[in-house]
Length: 326
Image (cartoon, rainbow, N blue to C red; front, side, top):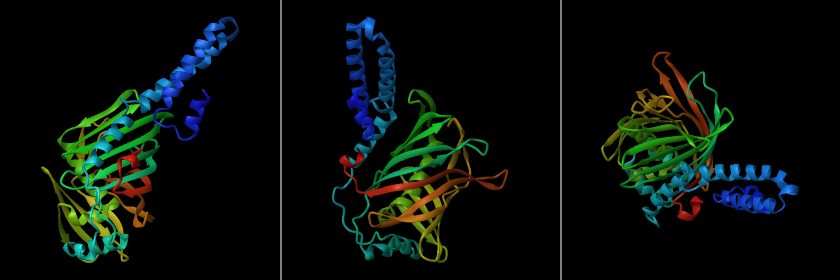
């Protein structure tokens, strides 16, 4: 029991539930040998069993957390171990405002980005009348001929834990969610989601990995000194977005007409304009990136923007190894 408590105190490693299960077995075995005097301790054993059971569902081999780790590890293994440096000459292929943005981030002179691991927190809601749900999350994106994205959030809904896993590989996307790590409340896939998640992959590339833009399959068009349009093509998907910059070269918004809004249960999708305005920037390990922002839909009926997520990136690391994924 002390070992279980210590494991939870240091940050709840994924195997803490094994210690709890062992503690329950040992505890009840001791109680049985002195049943008349110690039977009340069975209540504690029951609590341990419930805790171990939830730990297994939340962190065990069948959990969405385990699937995130497996998919992220597999994606990292496909990446180049020692990518070359990004040089000023590499920016010659980019339109002026985009080159200024990449330069502004400090990516020049650093290794080219082949993967990014980000940790984040924030809050999310399904509609204007829905309550905000606080969440923490982690994501792993990889770039190159086969871009991948694995995104996991742990939210709280009506006091109960909700875990949602987004997976994207080979232009195919899925979204699955579980309440208390047991009851499936989301299970989405299909062409509409594939297209929508391709826009998200493009958005992550621009916000989190600007150093990877020089190698990305994107056709750019420049509109003045503060806006460029990019057409991102991967596999059978091709999506378009406008990038807006301020006078200092910082990215201030990413706008696309190609993303689709999911219904609350993820069973249907509706095309709506989508935007991710940036609120703050911060330096992560030598690179200046958007650190705080939101994502929103333009409601065509109300002709107003609806913000459904507010988030803050707490850490962003490039070119991660398997050991970095925990």
